[in-house]
Length: 422
View 1: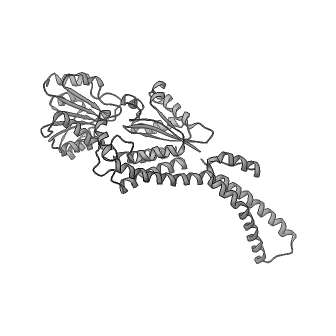
View 2: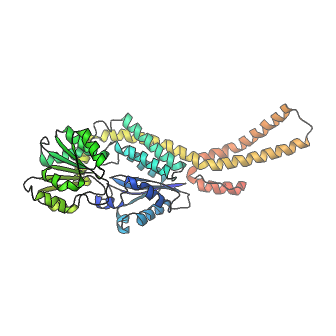
View 3: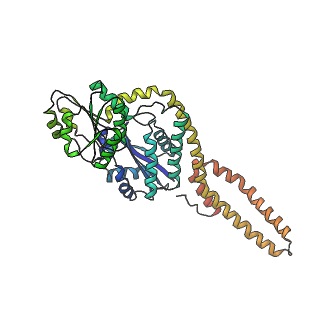
């Protein structure tokens, strides 16, 4: 069984590329069904920082090429961009290490953030429901989730960690200064919107307006914050009086475009407007940044602050890496056992069949034996077979790097077919 990974993330690709391949949570089932045309088993992990496809196939399939084919066929990315920005990992240990680091928050824009652990679990759950998960993939993702929890429990990687929401507030403060007299418009009533709104409120912003394509969700979030819901159709009116706009909605199209912002700024030309778009795909038309007195930022603009956070957590990263190494050893041992299990089982079954058949032939030629005598012969022949197989089985279990050669040798020596695990 070969497991590979194809993806793009915030380290390898700008947001202009990442938003092309971003898959919204409501679309995951659809894209998993499309993935089924390329691979029997697979999991898609798509967040604001990454879109990754994990594929498991038999050894005679190039899973790296399979993943690239899926990206080229079904995601909106030219082959030139895919070649330039995508990473392909085909070694199982390297795939596992990448996923473990991701689940631990070491590969996030904000080191140690919690959200990614839930996103890894959600990707597994959705793929399970789609019938796309086999035993190796399931164990890989479950091991990553366990590792992510251990790192957060046994290190301080997430203690007082920055979050995307807190970085957004810091960015707004840099431009505006004191937020205590500001008016905030949140577009998007999901978890990201809730966290940003809460962070801004905790900094003293008294007026919070919430807009969403789902009015009930906007009303519910506004109620918890002591804010007010607003209809998306009335955005221009709200932009006239807002100081900060944060967008974080799942939408395939622009929610704020040049027309919206230009119309609002005509009535407030001297009042600066900070627009922070943390959605992927982006919610705000990029040309908005050309409008006078408008300061537009996207999630990639948070990098400077996040790098300072990384430097503060170097010691915790070292501790997390040690835990990851230990968990990778456990996973490698499990994979070894999984890879050799079919060969070992088949070899033992054939040996037992030969032993049993020969014992039956021998017993028919002997005088009638007591049950105790038959038990002695049974135990003796089983012991002989076990002793003969002891060294070969030990070799198989401890030399999985050459498992293909071992399988071929076993087939030739014992004349049986080894079935690979799914």
